[in-house]
Length: 261
Image 1 (spheres, rainbow, N blue to C red):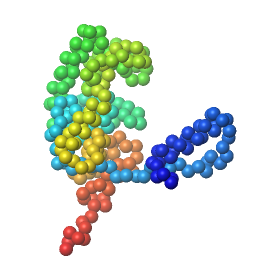
Image 2: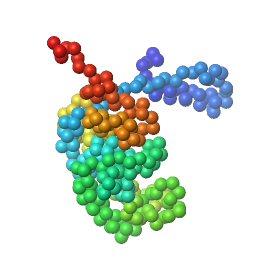
Image 3: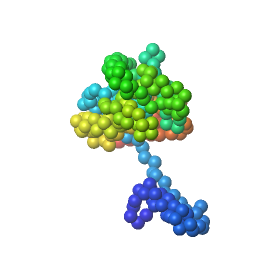
Image 4: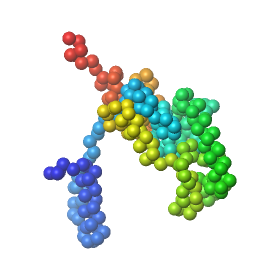
């Protein structure tokens, strides 16, 4: 406390001491239940205005532009976007079907119209890459759960390929096979930070800021909070309620008395 360290640092130190006494010294610490773990302060999410979103996207292109456009247009987390499979994209119904997202829950969210055509062209290039990989004998991908053992041929099927594959294949350390994994999150983050600097934004913008902006802008447009909760995949609506605190209107949004002078 005297050094004003973060709550996570305090909890890490406490866990290390408990491990030392229990597992190394084999000594029982009395009244462990009285130890109070530090709590992380609840912070409001960083939300971009629509103009700021446009400005950042204007400084991006290629695959990073497509990924970030989906983050904002569909409310996905970065890893959820990078782990998308071809079969998860439903152009006919204009939706994205997420299988076992965060919390191992399936959910459906919207596929933005402005992303559909660029995404189709992108998938055509990915399919050509997949065809060449098959010719080189490296067309497989990792499959969820025990599916790799039950239906190993599915790893080479087009529907199970990643929407955003890595630029180069690599050896899977668990399976011992050369495969093409999904794009690494660091490449998107680097492109995003370059775009944020280009847009000259003073806010601390991360990939998650676009998910926050998705939710806030939907509420601004009048969509009910339960709908936003389902699109985001929140288990409890109280988690979604945080976005009512950053709205320009509604919730706690009030007009300052100074503006009435």
